[in-house]
Length: 495
Image (tube, rainbow, N blue to C red; front, side):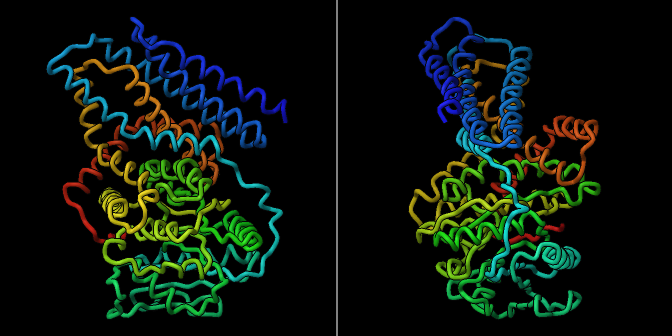
C-alpha cells in the first residue's frame, strides 16, 4: 500500500512548490505557466492516485484523459500566442474590454467537476459474474404515442435483451396519452396505462410528470419492486441489465435503497445523422464526468437524466410525481431535488443504455431550450434547501453566459486586447476539459458502435475538431433562443 501511494504524492508536492512561486513576473508566458502548472499538477496527482487504485483498463482511460487535457491546454496556448500577441495592460476602455474576458471563466466550476469525475471514473467490474436476483424490475416507458416506431423498437429491445440476460423477473409498463393501437399486444410481461384526458393531479402537474404520477398511483407493482425509467427511444443493453441487477442486490443487502443512474450512449443512428450524433457525444462524456462525480457524492449536483433512473417503488412514492406546473418542465431534476430533501441518496449504475440524437436542428434547439428553462426554474424555485440546488444554479448561470462568451470570443479575434494570464489559464483549462469530455464520450460511442479501425476513429475525432465552431454555435444559439423565447412547454423531439 505504501509503495502504491508513494508516487501519487509527488505531483501534490510539485503543485505546492509551484503555488509558492510568485506570479509577479515580467514575462507573460511565465505567469501563465506559474498559474497553469499547479492546476495540472493537481490533476496529475488525482490521476496518479486513481491509476494506482484501478485496473489496467481504467489506467488507460485516466492516461487518455490527462494527456488530452494537457495536450489541449498546450495547443490552446500555442494558438493564442500566435493570433493574440501579448499586449500591455491599458486603462480606460481597454480596462473594461479586458474585464469582459471574465465571461470565459464562468464554466470553471463545471469544468473542475467534469475533470474530477473523468479522473475518478471506474469501468464496470466483471459484469459477467453478476448473479440473478429475485426482485421484480419494471421497465417503465412514458410516451405520447407519437413516435410509434421508436416506442415499438424499445419494447422489442427490452424483451430481446431480457431473453438474453434473464437476471430478474420483469414487466414492461408503457404509459400513453393515446390508445395502444398499433403497438405489441398486452401480455403478462407488457402492460399499458392510458392516461385519461381529464386526469388532473391535486397540484396541476403537466406533461411527462403527470403521466408518471398516474402510473405510480395505478400500477399494481409491490413496494419492493424496482422501476427503471426509460424514454420512448431508450434501449436497454446487456451491460445495463447486469449493472441494474448488481445495484439492486447491493442496495437490498445494505438497506440504503439509493437511486441509481448510469451512462447513456447516442450512437444508434450514426449513419443517418452523423453530425448531430457527434454533437451529442459531449452528453456521454459528461455522464462519465460530472454525473459520475455526482453519483459518487450521492447528490445529483447537476440534476438527473429523465431516463435510466433506477429506483425502488416505495422510494419513488416518498415524493411522487405530482410536482406542479413549475416542476413539470424538467421533472427529473425537480424530483431528484425533492428526493434529496427526504434523505434519499444516489449511486452509480454500471453498464449503459442506448439512445439516439435528435433528427433536426429545430428539435435540437427546442430540446436545449426545455432543459435550460426547466433547470433554471428548478434551481430557483424547487422547495428544497439551497445546498441541493446551489451548484445547479451556478451551472445554469454559466450556461446562460455561453452566448455572451461566444460573441466576446468572436470580437476578441478581431480586436485582441489584454487578458490576464490567470484568466486565460482558467479559460483554457475549462475549454480543454470540454474537449476532453467530448473525446471520452466519442471514444465510448465509437467502441459501442463497433468502429475500431484506427483510420476511421481518427477521422471522426478530426471531424469533430473541424465542426467544433459549429457545435459551439448550436449550443450557444439554443441558449440564446431559450432566453429570448422561454417556454415551459414539453416539446417532444422526433427520434
